[in-house]
Amino acid sequence: MNPLLALSDPLFDHGVTGVIILIVLIKIVVGFGALMNAVILMIWFERKAISDMQSRIGPQRWGPFGLLQTMADGLKLMGKEDLIPAEADRFVFKLAPFLVVIPAFITFAIVPIGGTMHIAGHVVQLQMANPPMGILLMLAMSGISVYGVMLAGWSSGSKYPLLSSVRASAQMISYEAALGMTIVIVILVTGSLTTHDIVLSQGGNILHWNLIRLGLVPFAIFLIAITAELNRPPFDVVEAESELVGGFHTEYSSFRFAIFFLAEFMNTITMSAVMVTLFFGGPAGWVPPVAHLKWIFPILWFLIKTTIFCFCYIWFRAALPRFRYDQLMDLGWKRLIPLSLGWMLIVAGFLISWRWGLLMGSVVIFAWLVLTRAFELGKTRESGPERVLPTIGQRPIPGSVIRKMSEGDS
Amino acid sequence: MDQYLPILGLLLLGVLFASGSLVASAWLAPHKRPTDAKLAPYECGIVPESEPPQRFPVRFYLVAMIFVIFDIEVVFMYPFAVVFRQLHVFGLIEILTFSLTVFAALVFLVSEGALQWGPVKYLTPGMPERTSSSTIVRIGRDDPEQAA
Image (spheres, chains in turn orange, brown):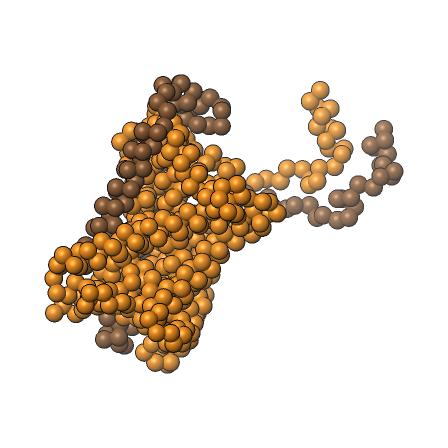
């Protein structure tokens, strides 16, 4: 048997029968429903938490604590006039929301929600899919959603969405390299791409979590890169209201707009879940010795951890000011990419022996010195001697000079 | 390919959901003939005067090209990471060599200023020395030139 296939979902070991198709269908529908409900709750939670942090009341009319506000908003958007601007490329304009929302749906499939269960004599993993390519699926899907963002802005035939989508795609691809590199670090210690194995290798106690096992740096890089990838504050230059009207979906109205909104929040939840999977042991946690209910505790642990991260994103939005675009690109290219590359080498060295680890550490420190020199050279390229302006007067200009200048004019 | 059955199912479900909700929206939404103002590009109420730009700052193309280097690098890292335990020291040295080539590319790009963003910075040399007498205006002690 192919060793790679042995790592994947045991449900398909003995071919596909009717029962297995039924199990798959149930998993998909339950997962889909759970995700949609989570999105609805997340939008409500974001609005409520933000308004609490800003001393406002927030949604409170629909349902208890305003819980049904999102449903009401969705229904309202459905009843709105669906407009396609005259300048738009009609086919691409209609295609773009699909390209954004479908990757958002699919990414959640690989997240392990709980342990394993036995249903009708089959071992069922509590995750929608566990393909051998595993975490690569997440990277592939985030790559596709760049297309959605880019095409949405381009096809609108309007200035600001176009600028916004160019910014967005530059930002998303810039942080994808750092993101991919931190996932490489996780895979180094796991030795497998599947999310199930990544979670299993972090079982046991809290010291086995990748957060602690890899040092805090990969987690910090991943958190920053994923926030930028999601275009969430403080990296939301894509939707900077003061510069670009409303981001790449300015021209979208009615439910097409709602789909972009949905996809954004779905991605936020999915990425929180991926973060929990990669660094916080996924569903791992203390399980009390209760018969017949053991399967429910991993799910609870998973939900608690994911909720904490969802709250983190909301907190970022309330607390942090927006980055400037050049700061954002500098952070991505000049800090995160070299740092993640260097940390990968150090982790790889320490996995072999501590001597190799120390050697790698010194190589990385030397490389850092070279890079610092390169930064200085780059700065002089940017503002060299040919960019020096002649002095104009004194600063601040004394009153006598101003008067002379104004007299000369009259 | 059995492993990808749930993903295929989810893809179909996603397409169904998105197109179904769009159909529902088309059914519920009003069908008016939109005015010209509604169909025009939205610019906060200002009448658009120019076409959307056909050309971008060249930095965006640069970023896309540089991205290819680093993404290819990351893609090559994945197979290495999966079989790292078997490769042992050999793999480590190989990946160090590979990383050094990519790192050289990064150093070259950074030192050429290819990754510099933001407006071009202009320097002004020979700023006159700023002292308390040149920056502070003392009220009630106007100099005779100013009083004249």
